[in-house]
Image (cartoon, rainbow, N blue to C red; front, side, top):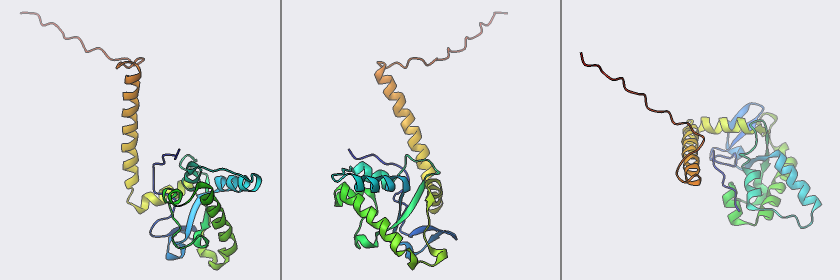
Length: 193
């Protein structure tokens, strides 16, 4: 089952080719082939590939590696260089699992991480992509699109709350229990003078 992933576009790779550097966030063609992935999940995938000969991965594993939306704002994303994966290597988890099996996708991302480590010397010190937090990335994406995501997120939350209330009503036979409904205020009787 493919995980439903909502939120800002992922992976943290925009058409402007953004990367976090010692100078801060920089948009440049230098970063066309740089993607950011979850550091923890990348390490888990490497261990799994190294220790289990017949390691199995799902499309959800690919999505959560490339789009760790369930992680806290403090969790790290690390740069990987997909140059070694070919010119037409997909930059979204959806395209990636359409193009290849999940295990092959994970292996390609691990290869891209290894390639970055081998070739990061090609960047000047102040241009070198460095890790960023999930929170930092979300701020950058929001700033880059004029903050449009924030409004969309609020709408999504309101829709989710409405759906939850509807689901509760259906489960309870159309009535929502445990919710106090205020009684209408009693009208005062006028006395005839």
